[in-house]
Picture 1 (cartoon, chains in turn green, yellow):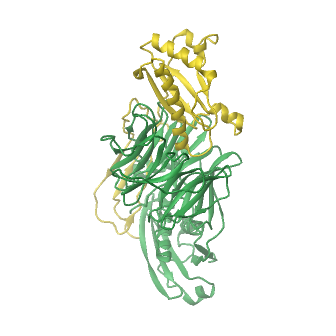
Picture 2 (tube, chains in turn purple, red):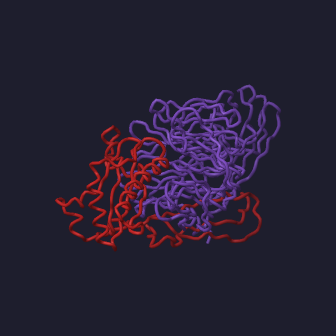
Picture 3 (cartoon, each protein chain N blue to C red):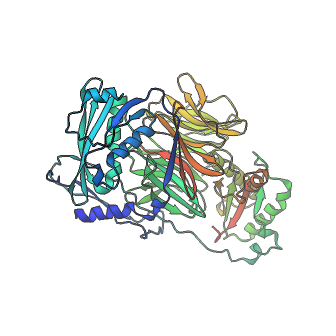
Length: 422
Length: 187
């Protein structure tokens, strides 16, 4: 039983979808990076890929850490570190660990984090996993370190969804937050847009054109089981989950024009949320579920508005410029990422919702579909470079940039998944 | 080495590459199951694998089977209406085309038409979907003014997703701001 499962997983990881590997480039760095030494783990050499290398890559990519040279000598969590020596090398923190085989195709990783300045332990853990889950294990260790040293949850164990378009083929893919381990959830000859993660991270809502018109589906990732949430006469699009996962806001044209509706996650109980003479689209729930942000041209140009989730009076949010669309709210409810056009260029912008201060974060021309990391630190979005669709990520302070691209296709429609509870 | 901890959670993935499911209706057949087997509490926390099963929908196919709709000499073979930038107004040059299709629909009451609106690629995909819908709705209004029953026609949008011209300049965008008319069997 156990062996079968392990082999099935290994086969899954080697599935053909994996060819569309995202590659990552990083530029820029945070202002006050924490110097950390991550020693090679004892037993790293027995693995196809060093566990400590996965942890290092994660932390470095965040732009929040500066890696201190550790040398090739492995350091186990059981050993007492020489605080004076690490301090002299400039490290504020030290991570040590070990990996061992704990059964056929099974591994166990142990680690401990040390505060070098205070000569104290910051904790550690033992993690058991299938050997094929090496990277996942590394991400969990990186999350632990990130949270202990920054006070915020890390997003290394989270996943992202996006659509890859290659000749006549659209694939909805799910990968780790670092772009590795891509898996195809849906492969279709017709377009797929607007993937949205359920708050529990088990399901994706999206719009598929496989019926020659836009239809909203909810798709359970582990099983591939999916159901239609909205397939009314006309177009059905722009799904957004309520924070409790029970409902979706969608855009339907069944009663004329693109208008906002609420529907239960099983497709029942559709009811109208708002009425306007123009276009209402791109709904997005606030974290408390009390209001819905959306795009509307009711004022003559597309702008962002907010409406109570139970219906009611709308409030206009954006005023500068003639094209502000695709609102997404950060998990702390304080900022809104959106796309703003100026001088014919579509750029990622972020607004402080309390002060209404807006900053344009990019200098590109075709930005689309922003998506906050669940800790609010990074915004993932789609853009175009050299005529090809790529994903880019930028820290919400604009300092650290990453680019993710697929060798043989256009990547678009990114959506960052929720925190993983383990 | 420590005695290995009893495995707690097993994701049993049946749907692997080459084992594509073909949907037959809105509700999909399950492609796999998730299984939990109870056991003793482990010394270490297990790392839960996150499986993703793959789905491949089938493409519809067919044909209306009426020769006039395909005859290049017949106006009914013309199926596209083009629009100006940021506009939903139907230009005079396309009125004879829409009138011919209205007449055809009135005389073939069992045939249905799908009116697909499209937009150029600039800006938000969902907003462009709504712009394409406005164009499709404009054509639908004219057909209904000419007496076509609403039950016979459906206006939908493909937004910027199905450009006729894959280019990125003004002439490509002009080709992509359009409405296509499809008859039963063609969608």
